[in-house]
Image (cartoon, rainbow over the protein chains, first blue to last red):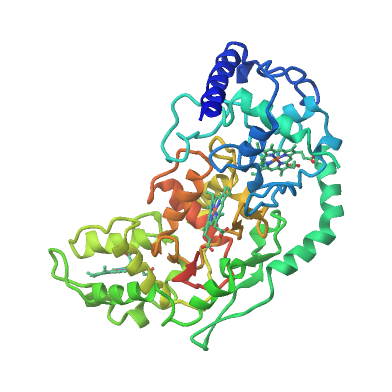
Length: 156
Length: 286
């Protein structure tokens, strides 16, 4: 109970801190290879939270397309490659770039851009089928950092 | 450069893809009521030569044994309750003209045989491409003086199911040239457009990734030869445009309306990707 309250306070604190420093989707600096050298929040990512984001349908739902062997999520898909050992293939900056906007690396990929808010055709208001107002990115800046932190643990 | 890379990767992966594909398509045949042979795999029509698909597959191929089974006998197929309602509606007088469908079209088994296989098609008098649903509503409003059915509701799907049954086992043979060419091209364009915040086109899922899984969903080629389909999830018949709408909505996009010109065009195009498969409606899907 106390611990819960404490961590809730912490989260609240952290997210205020994060908001102050978040790099907005349109301000993200990608290098020529689609990597992002700077943290989007300045707050270290939480790998446990990153895994949760990746497994949760209403969040990243990365396991819809990717298999992650250590994840216990049911029904992992195979539209994309397995993410096992992904940290051996890409460094942290590259991983951040891939998660934020994989199209900078793979222009035609089916992988959605998780930290981008413009350039879409008939964007909708989430899954309502109605037209969108102002778009939020699919993941928050901190969620991107959390996911990247988790991906860095995936080495073989 | 990227293309080259992709091709190499594709070539390298080919061996494994082929074996996966074998695992997907176990070669089972669909015979309904022990007598109607359904073509569930066929050579892709010529217009698909650039798609990388050489064999078109009915959605039935991708379904579990239990779901497949439900379609193999009309007594097990829950859609046949709707077919019965369709027969009733066929014979019911409605509207200001005091007519039923049967008044003009007589026996549905005779007059509607082969109809579903060629829809959507050009209507010369109206100068437009008509879906089966569009034609049914045209008869209701202009021939019977009755109200149009709601495009994707149960009265419509029941009538579509009844009419589809009369063509079961016949090859889908939708015309794509002549007066429909422009509409067809519009449908093709829509099929390859990456809609919504997830930026996914029909092709991304149903052409590039059929046979793969998106979470629990086993992706088919998104064929419509089986429509209207009885979806176990909805416990009811689903109209073609309703399915299109759901698929577009799931890309976090603003969808088009059922019966809209965009969906009519898309239906024509998607139907033509099934040319050579059998009419299978009303089918059963999860």
